[in-house]
Length: 92
Image (cartoon, rainbow, N blue to C red; front, side):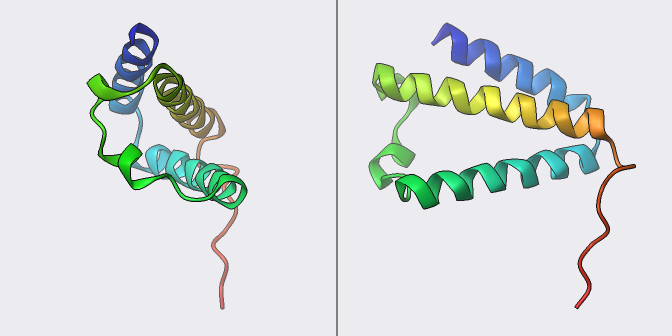
C-alpha cells in the first residue's frame, strides 16, 4: 500500500498544480487507455469496483498502483505538451 499511497499523494500535488485544460487532456489520454484495456480484457468486474482499499488482494493493489502511475504520467504529459500542440476539434 505504500507505493499506492505515494502515487496518490503525488497525484494530489500534481493535480493541484495543473490547469483545468491539462486535467482534461490527461482525462482524454486515460480514456483511450481504458478503452483499450476494456477492448482487450473486457469490463472491470462489478465486485472490483465496489471494494475498499483495505479489502484488495496483492495483485489488485499492484494494478491500482499501476493505474495511479498511469494517471501521473498522463497528467505530466498533458502539462509538458501544453495547449499549443492540441489538434483542433473535429467538425461535422
